[in-house]
Each structure stands twice: as structure tokens, then as C-alpha cells.
Image 1 (tube, rainbow, N blue to C red):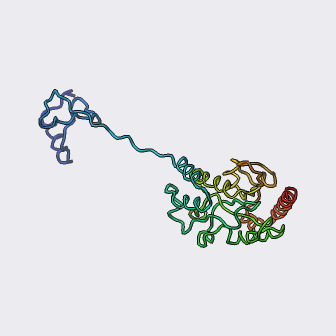
Image 2: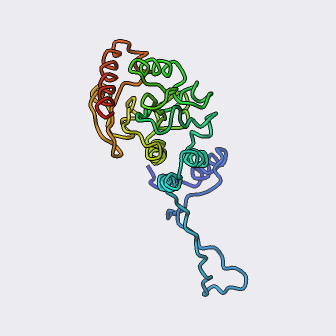
Length: 262
């Protein structure tokens, strides 16, 4: 067989390629189309001269946690802190929430309860723990002569780690918790409780840096310079009624602690 393609065969191959839509031939040397081609010189600039470099403005960066700390620390009282939280622009949860859920109960109470995040009822009303879980919480507190509507030594103060409801009541994301933690710590400092009750895994993670509420509950710990008692969240107790026995033991422990410090 002749090693060289004859003229007729070459022409037939070319005509077949044209019929198939080929419009360009492949060169002998590859072309790197990723290489940047220098733009043609502008009018008035010689080919040898180089146009002055235009300074590129550095992208502006910000630290949302640092901004939260500055805003929180600038608040001198609870109304100012609530206003600072409402004005904080970096938490996307605010865009989908109806209300900022700040607090309920009596500021200055000995016991400050920290929940996780608002649910549907809390978002609608603008107060923490007002749904079924909140009603159970009120009955639990009443059993040891405490309540959000009481005064003096029987009063409690209630807030959440997050002031805005997460979509579909999902768990807060780490960045959302990190942004809101400076506000929570400032909230505690301004409310000045004697001790904290943290309810649920999210609250324990935020203030104690720990998870595993079934292991943590009933074990006194410390955060922000205060005694902390982890407890089951009332919503958990509604799903797991058998755990109410442990919750009752924790309430009695709380009552004993308060009576000791009275």
C-alpha cells in the first residue's frame, strides 16, 4: 500500500470535512489560548512606552464578630442593647424574622434563663418562651415558686442565644451564634443575674462551649463569671416526657442553690 495519500483521496477527505461543517484547520503547533495577549497601545502612547499602572483598590474586609462586640460593648443599658441588636446588619436571620425577640421577665432577677432561639409563636409575639414549650417552662418555674411575672426573689429573666427565628426552626449556624454571642454576653452583664440556667444544646454550646445536654444537665458549671446550670429544653421535655424526672431534680437543685445564697 502506498504510504502517501493520493490527490483524489485527499480531496475526497477534505470535501467530506466541509460537508460535516469543519471551518478551521489545525495548525502544526498548538496555541495556548489561556495566555494573556497584550492589548494594543492606546493612542498617543508609543509601542515602547508603558502606560502608568492604575492602583487597584484593595477589597474592603470586615469582621462581623468584632463589629458585634463593639456595638454590644457600647450599649450602656438594656434598651440601648436592644437597639444595637436591631441595627446590627450582618445576621441574615433578621431579614426573614417578624420580630426581634429580646427578653421577658424582670431585669435584675437572680435567675436568668437562656434559651436557644425563637420559634414561630415567639417570632409572632416578640417574646421568648410563649409557645407550648414556654407554657411548660412557666409551670416548671411555678413549681419552685419562680416566675417571669413575679417580683423580688421569685422573679426570673429570660432571653435566647439568637434574637431572630431561624427558618423552619433549624439549629443556628456557627457563624450566626458567633455574631450574636457578644450581644448575649453584654445582655448578661447588663441584667446582672446571680446565676444562669441554660436550656438545651445550643445554649450550652454558646456559653459553655460544650454539647451533649443529656450528659451536661444537672452539673453546675461556670461561664462569664457566673454559676451555670444546664437543663433540658422544655421543647425536649414535650417530646420526651420521661425526661421530666431529671428536669424536676434539676429544678430542686436550682431551688436549693437559691435558698443557700439567699
